[in-house]
Amino acid sequence: MKKNDNLEFQPIISSEMIYDGKIIKVRKDMVLLPNGEQAMREIVTHYGGVCILVIDGEYTYIVRQFRNPSGKVLVELPAGKLEKDEDPTAAAIREVSEEVGLNAKSIHSLGKVHSSPGFCSEIIYLYYCDEFEKGSQHLDEDEYLRYEKISLKEFEAMVLNGEIEDAKSLAVYLRYKLLKEKENV
Image: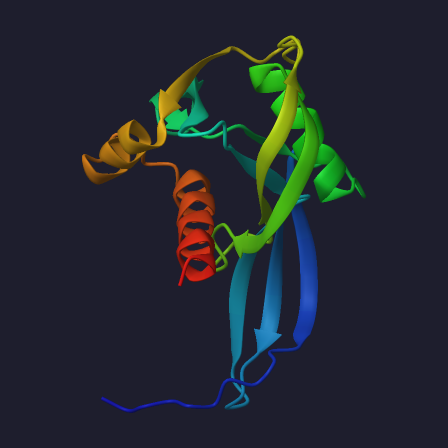
């Protein structure tokens, strides 16, 4: 097997919009590979999203929501999509309020992750919130979910038993847990 260490930028030779939807766009790009050959890439573009771990002492909040692409109800942390040019921190504050009825007084960035960089431009911004006041849940008109307050130990058990399959929720919790462990060293 030939090893290829040439990781150069692949310039786009041509691009064709295939689908222009409300949430995603799909285009077909022809790129120039480092070896001079051309290759086709199908790209889904998306404005991005946010995912927030709410820390309430030894508890957190999860949401249960039917996700059409998976065909089932998934357990997730509060999250949502960004609007075009929306500030991710503002979106995170909005989503915590909408989904679990909490008004964030302090929100902290945990960085970002690429959801599926092989074909999608979506970036998910990760946050945790540990200061808030009670408000009221106010979901979007087409949003149906149920939230629950559970212990962090229960959340970890759900991760280990495979009940939490949502990548963004796993990523934000891992980043938070590693950050807290590093702070206590």
